[in-house]
Length: 162
Length: 131
Image 1 (spheres, each protein chain N blue to C red):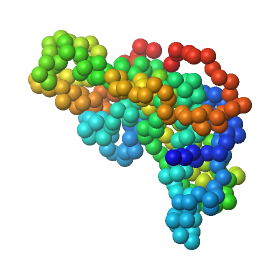
Image 2: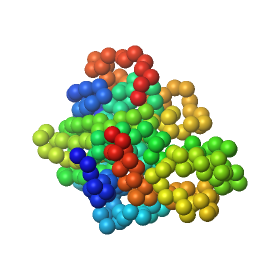
Image 3: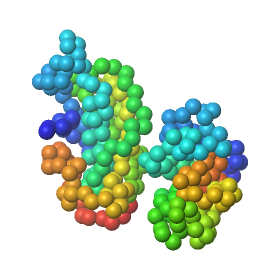
């Protein structure tokens, strides 16, 4: 299944902030049902796009060593609809990061217009579910997600610090 | 700059309101974080992050909410109740909580009730004094 809600990164400041871009297009099938005659990007998918932007930022900060998963939507406010043909930018900032979790704040903009404000918390599941077995490979950060960072970040040496 | 207990309580209240999406008046000193205020494990991490930022202190994760290591150790728990060794460990690790009622019935399922707003305020005060 293809589940990627951002198209490219415009900026990437490792460990601090990132800006991603998404083009919204009528080729996205769900828009024909959401809603018939009035297609708008579902807010839940805007949250997912922000979660992917911020999640990659958080994962890369720790060299993709942990599986970073969305654990909590702290706050989430939407100001305008997003329509097909719009280009939105997702601005994510790491507020706090620790070995077990991270919290991020973010805004979605359409040009200069504020579309949404979304704060999230991520859990690093290898550190939080001791004793449970997970597949060896990092199933959260697939090659497609990592390829978004090509040219933007240098691969880090493995660090053991928090 | 020494903060009074009221000032610390005020800041802790703001942290809890933001982290748990509560109304101001829900946060009383005796309210339990999990029972009354609906906090879950991910919320504890959020609360620790915000307390660190608000008060400029460092809180190692296990310090504020050390229950997990206590509950999983067979020396400290027997038949669903804390052993004497466990109780001693609890007193040592969580001096910021009021364990007088818990001592009468050390049922580990009731441990969550120790995490009150007052305990968080006590903890922060302790950290600020030590800083």
